[in-house]
Image (cartoon, rainbow, N blue to C red; front, side):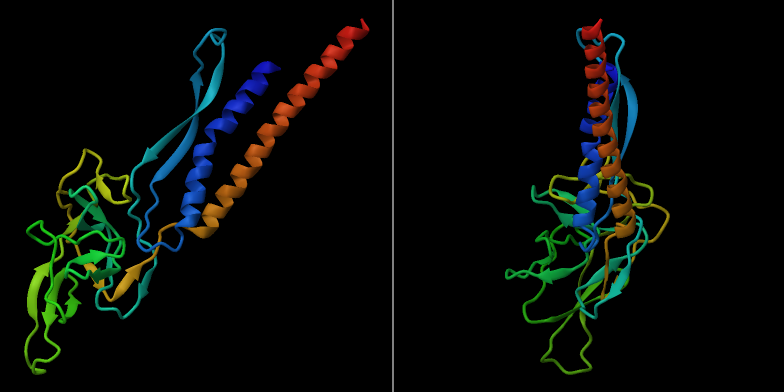
Length: 252
């Protein structure tokens, strides 16, 4: 019976990763551009250590590959909001100064005139440097990522000026992983992405919602809760069985 309790306790310990992933997804259901990444599963592994030669226990294995499945597109009318289409990602500068990528499209201009995401990461242009915009100008972004600025005090017929083009990449052929700052990078390491077969594009004046299914996440959380209760009950029944066996031995 000790093996049964041993395996049940090991399963409870390993399933904690799945529970953490599910609760994190539920916490980011309303986060703009949030993408699911972690997928976990249990597999049988041989236990190591003294007295464990014949023991096997469940072991959690995980994959942290970003799933670029699009979320719901929400029209906002804000000229600096962009929803990235298909597997398009936006190049930004990470907290360590290196190139990284994101699906977050709620952009704004900092007090220093740098175009940045709502998370404070500067948006990169075609030259790989952060985009700066002239103060007081009206900005607009086209579907190909072209950023235009127009002087609100100029004549109505004055054409807008091209400032730069957002660094858009098609990641349909590149596996991305999540960095510690929440941004994405290629699985092979930091650096640029080689475009896939699709042309990178965006939808202006719109935002992409999270690709987490609230119903699916709640169902997984309920399933994990029931599995936890089942494992605890298994340990309790193992304990009761051992106690009953010990009582029988005393009577003889």
